[in-house]
Image 1 (cartoon, one colour):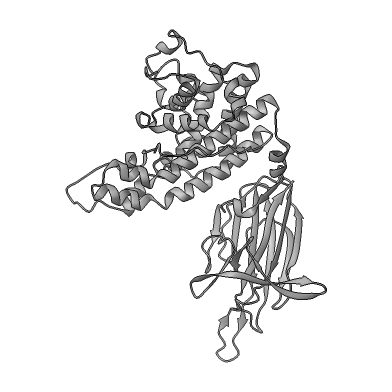
Image 2: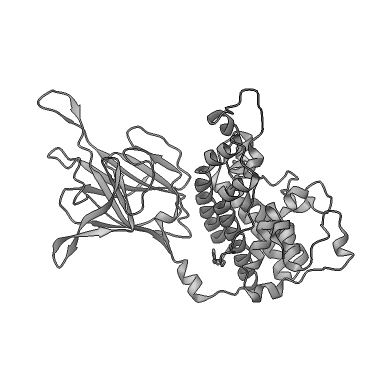
Amino acid sequence: MAYSTWSGHALLGRLAYDALPDWQKELIQLDLSPAAMAKPYFPPSLADSGDKMGFLCAIMDLVYYDDCRPYATLPDGRWIPHGPPDANWQAAGGSGQPKSLTQYVKLIELLLERTIAPMREGNWEEAVRHGGALAHFIQEPFTPGHAVDNAIFHELFPDPVPDRHMRLHHAFDNACGEITPPPPRLMGTSIHECAFRLLLDIERGIRCGKRIIWPVIRSVYEGFPQSMQQQLLKEQSRMAVAITTSAWYTAICIARDRFDPSETAALDRLPLLDIDPYFFHAWQYVETLPGCLVQNKRKIPIHVYEQRNGSPAEVEIADGFGMGGHMGIKWFVDGDLYPRFTCEVGLPSRQLEGQTEHLSTRFHVEMDATVNQVYSEDIEYQARSLAVVDLKAGEPLRKIEVDITGARSLILRAQSQPYTDPATGRIAFSIPHIAVCRPALSR
């Protein structure tokens, strides 16, 4: 097909369909009769089931058509939000309320249930309409215009032309068709697992999208053509296609109870670095840096001591991240899906800042059955303690393995105790860098 004639959600959906395996495409047999395709919202160019399934990813924008409204609305009649939801299933970017991660999962679950139920019955006309709403909803956050409060576009980056006034939202609605559809990934063997893993990909996509807000806005202010915005947003479009094809692929696998053992085995372990933290109490670290510590404002490799043949040996760690000795990080997790957390922790062997005679640092692993929202300057989050390690200079990594069943928050925090400087009488700290190595959730 000629992708140059397609745009928006329909384009992303058509690309996602192309990536589905043949056995799934053979199942998706849709009514392409003149009567079925005579709906006023269908363009005349739709030629096959892939076209129809792709186009129906725009169904949430067709809410004013009576035929489409049931698929674009919630059970109470309100619109499915066009972006991350708040606690009331409203679009958080517009409502002014915080995004709710727990409600986000529940809303994805609802849309998956609506999609999978007719698949099980072989009603593909119904399935692709609900599947279109699912796709639309999970694609939206990959454009910053639907992921954040648009007011920040104008507040942080005011128009340099004083007598000009334009809305920047639509500059981000520029899906690009120059994408090779990635192969789908199995996101779970249950609706709940699929919803949770989809959310993790969405959150990562939101974070990536924020990085291009200024380049896109600058291209608009400087008068570059739409093709420039499409290129800047190309990777966001690719991620939106990837999550759509994976969501559809997984929905069909669940509906048909057909799973590849190699794919299900890959779901058993979830590296913590694959989850973006929802809270970061910064020190010299403001985000998790895979395989890196910080020294003199530069990233450096992680070197630590491991116990080898009864004695410490220095090794370099790629699967890990650094954090400070007085800071905390929180992740949204599902301890019922992944009830085991393991990691190894220790002080670096080369980044020795803070490793003085006054060193007094403890590393804590905690959990909360809710999304923990406690803020504390002293790194006290009122959560359930699972493990505590006193960190010592020159010691090998210590292994931690804990049960996080029921958790919705996993918290790693460190506290360094102050001391009185004998020369000045002033309170001071020796805050070291900490290496968190091989952190993972598992079944």
